[in-house]
Image (tube, rainbow, N blue to C red; front, side, top):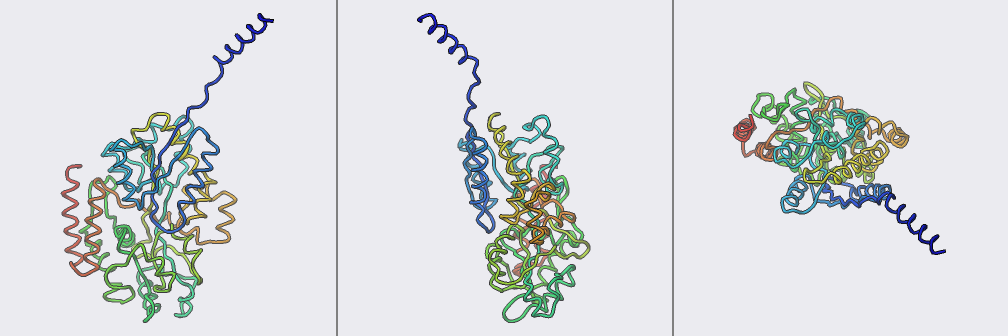
Length: 420
């Protein structure tokens, strides 16, 4: 009896030695921006909870840090103070600065064999801001283009075709005049928050890029760029179809919903919020063109911080792959209005059924055909601030468009000279 127990105990001990060890718990901290309308925190929380359920050995704390600039500042401050953070969704245009500060790791160093297909599964236009010098630094997630929202009821009242939004600058002015009266403006384009983004759209439409592909130079004082800012200003001062001065980014959606403007340019990230709140028939269209059609891409990318351990990097990659998977990207697009980041997302039954019922959800994606990378350079924050200030000083009449953009170009030259 004793000998039998001893042998059994030995066998048990031996089996314990060779049994696989339980997976070590990995805790991730993810900084996340909430910059536009909609219950985004609940959507992200739901995605994280589903991921944790499927991956019980990974715990994710999502820290909602405000807009994109707030998120960058808070995430980097946490890292510099020694607080743990492994990944974040930050501006796609932050890539140059994050590389320069040696804060992030390229995905090429994190992915394993067989992941090449995953890296190639995203829309190329959305990857443009995250691929620099032959490496992939950011993976698209909360992504957008600028779209034109318009009030179809107001179009009908003005005798305009409610199924035809402006396709050119001339039509924008002509329709804007028909839509403007004592109670409403024809068009509002936001000039606070992200004025450079709207201006880039207008410049593209006028046939000009604001920056070089390598992030080393800008074209703010180009005659066609100056002409672009003059046109934006003319919508209020000459044509009277837009309020004079600045138009607030944060309150524009509500102004549109309350009937203060017949048309607005805004992120597709507002689409679901407008759909849920509008008490009138509205449409969504690509932005109009002058020399060409065009919009910059926008929004955020996933980044993995360099200080993350190998296990944390692998866990971060699993979370990112989960959140960008076709089914999750489809649900994300439906819940928010942001784009599904891959063609496969639009091939899911869920998103196909949704877009068949609600065609405006395809506009931002279809506009990718005419899209370019969002404005980004080295010293992006400083260069962008100079451009934002120039735009606002011109729109408020403090300086002429030519004066304002010349000063912004001179400042950008100084800031970028060290990187050339």
